[in-house]
Amino acid sequence: MTSLLMKLIVLPAAMLGLTYLFPGLDFASVYEPLGLGVILALFGVGMEYMITIKSTLWLSVGADFILFLMLIISANMFREIDVTFTAAVIAALVLSAIESFIHLYLIRSGKTTRTVS
Image 1 (cartoon, rainbow, N blue to C red):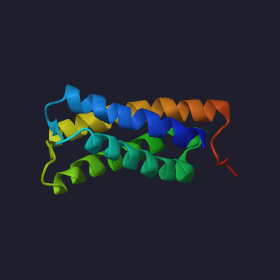
Image 2: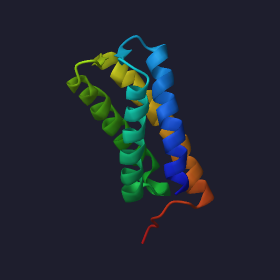
Image 3: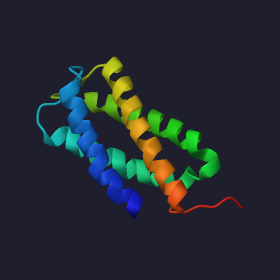
């Protein structure tokens, strides 16, 4: 639950900030990067429950990067959204760095749901 709340706040805010920082992320309105951030958070939490434990920290961050990159690029399906590949890679890198801090917090606080058996 902590992970979901953190991601629902941090990832949409980060997407909105990245939209204003990088000209290659062009959304028609404010709700689009916020909505994409919510989608990223929901997918990220699902993936986090499957693979995040102490020994798989970098695997989960790498999987987040690939997931974020695919979702940001897929935003080009909508007519009003224009995302360049370079901006998508940079955004995915920034979001993955943010995710690594979230994962580290969850691992160190013992809030991951899986344990190594």
